[in-house]
Structures are given as C-alpha cells and as structure tokens.
Image (spheres, protein in one colour):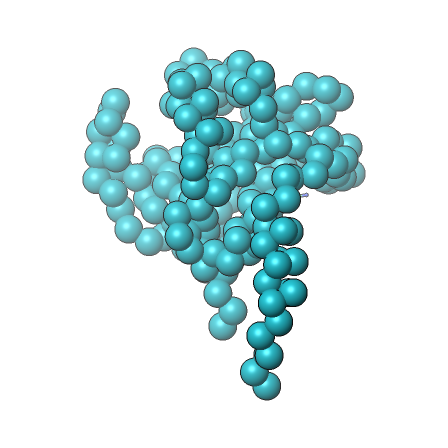
Length: 182
Ligand SMILES: CC(C)(COP(=O)(O)OP(=O)(O)OC[C@H]1O[C@@H](n2cnc3c(N)ncnc32)[C@H](O)[C@@H]1OP(=O)(O)O)[C@@H](O)C(=O)NCCC(=O)NCCS
C-alpha cells in the first residue's frame, strides 16, 4: 500500500538527519571504546595515525582535514578512542545519493578486531538517514587488506581509476555498497 504523505514525518526526519552525531561508548570484540565526531583540535592525532599506518607518509595534510571538516556538503567525520587515546577515524561526504568514504584508518595494533567494520557501519547509518543509495570509496589497487575488509562488508568492485594516486601513479579501485532495497 502506498504511504500517505505526512508533512509531520518529513519535518521529523529532517530534524533527525541534521542532528549532530551523539558521542557514545561502544563494545567491539568485547573491548570498550569511545566514539565521537572529530573536532579541529583532533587533527594532530589523525595526522599521527596516518604517519603510523602509511609508513611516515601523509595522504591527507592538516589543510585537507580542515577543508573536509568545513565542507558545505553533508559530511560526518568520526574518531574512536581507547582509554582516551585516538586509535582510528573515518570520514564521509555526501554527494547527492552517494555517501563517499573519503578516509579511514585504524592504528596497526588495533586492526583486525572489527573497528574498521564498526566505523563503516556508523557511516552506513548516516548514509541511510540522508537517503543515500550507495556507499562508495577508492582504494589503492595494491591495498588487498583493505579491499578484503570492504568485500566482507558487501562492497563490490566498480571501476578502475588509472593513476589516481598521483605521487606514484598507482591505480585506484572504486568500490560500491548498494543501500537500495532489492
Ligand atoms: C582498512 C582498515 C581501516 C580496516 O580496519 P580494521 O579495524 O583492521 O578492520 P576490521 O577489523 O573490521 O576487519 C579486518 C579483519 O578483522 C576481522 N574481525 C576480527 N574481529 C572482528 C569483529 N568483531 N567484527 C568484525 N570483523 C572482525 C574481520 O573479519 C576482518 O577479517 P579479514 O582480515 O579476514 O578480512 C585498516 O586495516 C587500516 O587502517 N589500514 C591502513 C590504512 C588503510 O589502508 N586505509 C584504507 C584506505 S582505502
């Protein structure tokens, strides 16, 4: 049966959609973590995570993070902490019906415990609230570890973007998770 249009529902859903992310404690693989939205003053911690996981390189500079946190498009940037220490983060920006995961990283010591998957799940909720039809991301063609995590979560390969990473001319694989009900 077709649902009757209810303006009250529309107002409620737009209020909910624009609500700031509520910080919370979460249990992942029987361990306690704290998750909240990223603030400007967190950027130095994000840069040090990048240095650790990308062997000293910084795929995103401080300016790149600052620009993303102030983007006009709807976006969500989250960090996760263990005992007050930031151990991972994720970001997403919405372009029309596409929620694009722009960056995700978990400190090596904390990888393989479900944290990355949990963060992607939070972004998926945000995408659904914003009526997105898909999640998308780019991953280095050589980054088989990340690709395996994404596939386990239901992402499939879409297109190859040649020489997407300019510093070493590496191709990117675009991966997509459809959020549309079959
Ligand atoms: C890619 C990355 C973000 C994934 O984060 P992660 O926390 O290691 O991911 P998960 O722990 O959720 O998944 C990794 C594995 O742990 C397993 N796992 C263990 N406990 C789990 C749990 N409780 N729940 C879900 N998965 C669990 C997953 O099944 C998965 O298994 P696999 O290795 O056989 O695929 C992380 O590896 C990373 O930061 N890599 C370096 C930076 C990077 O490459 N970023 C991506 C750029 S596109």
